[in-house]
Image 1: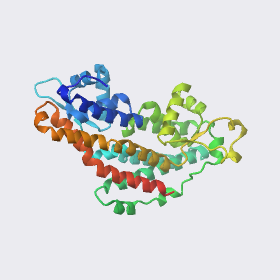
Image 2: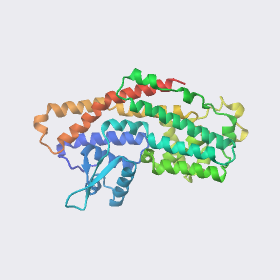
Image 3: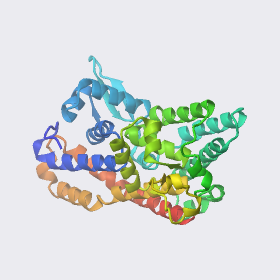
Image 4: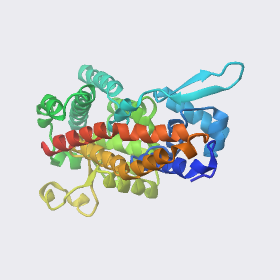
Length: 361
């Protein structure tokens, strides 16, 4: 943590706790550290200039500028010209309620883009081999998952039971959520040029246009490869990404931790695993729904565990209002804390709904 602050030094510990909350949550989700820190300071301060962000983060001017441009591009941040100045003020572009989408993942852009990719594949003359069929079905499965998220979010003001009654899981149930022999046999099969071009287009979308682009680039790319290809090895991921063994291993361990992927149970699938793969560790995102729902549940766990700490800070700040309220930063610190506490019932509602969805196999 940094000792730099624009607030009164007597509020420094509160600011650092807020910063720790944002950064720990971002680290768990494998978000870009640069974007996470810029977003955290904007959330705490309300609005800042590039000069102020450079001082707070200790980032270079170019890092701050590039990071803000990325946050603006994906709709997280807006900027306005400061009158009689060359500088802009930057601020978060949505309300606290909309931050639920930040936890679950984007929907509209993804649904529209993946829908276009599905249509493109269905109308193409690409050979209908197993890689083609699997990619098409995986994209359809992902769209259904995002639609499920959308149902939760557009109905968030309704009761938990009423929202649960609207969730249609039948559309997801017919997708193959066991590993079959073709998934393993085709791990090292090269995509034909046309199919690879489609895969690359999907990866570029998630890297540069999706709200998921706030994630660490390496983690994001590997997640998308799993979403598309289902079962992979470290060696294949190194070939696909060009990353070192150490970096691939680091990302895989994180994805295992947050529930996005799992190691293939070789005893369960022993009859379909060829000898060439018997001694290799196989990783899979077998069922996209389970992967993303489990990851979402764990993300909400990370958020909810801060409740006691935030309540303690609020109690102290309110109990000592007469002594502290004139300090620079008091109102903004208190507002940040109370925004979190105000959203807790909504966070819990979504968390419980995800648990219900996760239990429905």
